[in-house]
Image 1 (cartoon, helix red, strand yellow):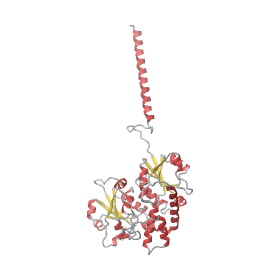
Image 2: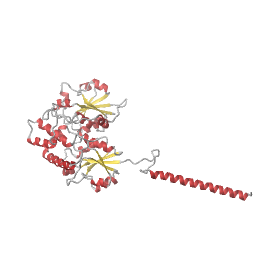
Image 3: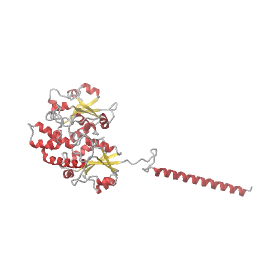
Image 4: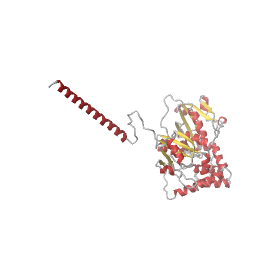
Amino acid sequence: MGPEASLSDNAHHSLRLLATLLLGGAVLGLSVLGLRLARPDGVWSSSSKKKRRPIRVYMDGCFDMMHYGHCNALRQARALGDQLIVGVVRDAEITANKGPPVTPLNERMIMVNGVKWVDEVIPDAPYAITEDFMKKLFNEYDIDYIIHGDDPCLLPDGTDAYALAKKVGRYKQIKRTEGVSSTDIVGRMLLCMRERSSGGTPRNASLQRQFSHGHGQKSEDGATGSGTLISQFLPTSRRIVQFSNGKGPGPDARIIYIDGAFDLFHAGHVEILRIARGLGDFLLVGIHTDQTVSAHRGAHRPIMNLHERSLSVLACGYVDEVIIGAPREVSKDMITTFNISLVVHGTVAEDNDFQKEEGNPYAVPISMDIFRVLESPLDITTSTIIRRIVSNHEAYQKRNEKKAESERRYYEGKTYISGD
């Protein structure tokens, strides 16, 4: 065979090889593209450098007199996504739709910002999800889903405040936490105030009946008319674990200890805990028993029982661990057992005369030079919250009547489900 034939064969062989390579590359490229398009989120696998966009969920509310039920709702909402954005309704809209709030917007913002499951807060949120605000949530805040509990949120005209979110398929629902509500807490406060007075006033008695819905609170002595009021809420170990961080201090951690009643957990508590946490690596909070609180603040306290108060404190992002039922006296054994580096106390408190007492509960840490008094950022106590309720009793009575009627209409024919 001549040189020309040999060159021709080589050329044909090269062309066939090139065609095979091109065809194989095209098939491989189409296969990879098909795999990418087949993924619902349109992203590469976890081994790739590109990551899935975080799912952002939105929940709003008044968060007035914020309690562990609110915190549990935020915990459940956070579990439905990667980032939780919370809208706090402005004062004017709360007044228009429900009646005046007990706590103003700035205090409610502090409370919501302090919850460990909250990533971002939107102030001055509207009470109802309007079409314009919903577009803002989707386009500016990249919200994927709007979350609310299974309890009713009705506008004055009786319509559902979340109707639009449900219509577009971007609504998810969580379970309401059983056993607590702001209305119930107001009832407890007013009943306490009634029992403090000599026989109470007809005004407070009437208001208490409106808020308690006719259900008497049991007292420590078993009666319903006197003694320390104790809620019937009892937490499970699962609930406590859900609220706990699950982490202990490191071997060389500087552990800060602060104790108190933390009754009606409020913005003043959050702010002093924030300052205390900034002094070390681990914040341990001691929560006094109901009996201890009653002995030093009167038979009408606490408003919230030990377990309720513990959950509220555990939900705070500045808190690492709590001692449920801590002794009032900080002993040497306690300091050694928990490896406490510094014991602190705020300047604003219900019982701030401890240094004048014969048995100063902080005598041991003072003698060890590990005690410090912190300047409280806010002049708010549990009594402050109670005074707000009593001084504006008529407005809160109307607010409660309006809410009770709305809930009655909503729940007719429905089955009540407790929070998860």
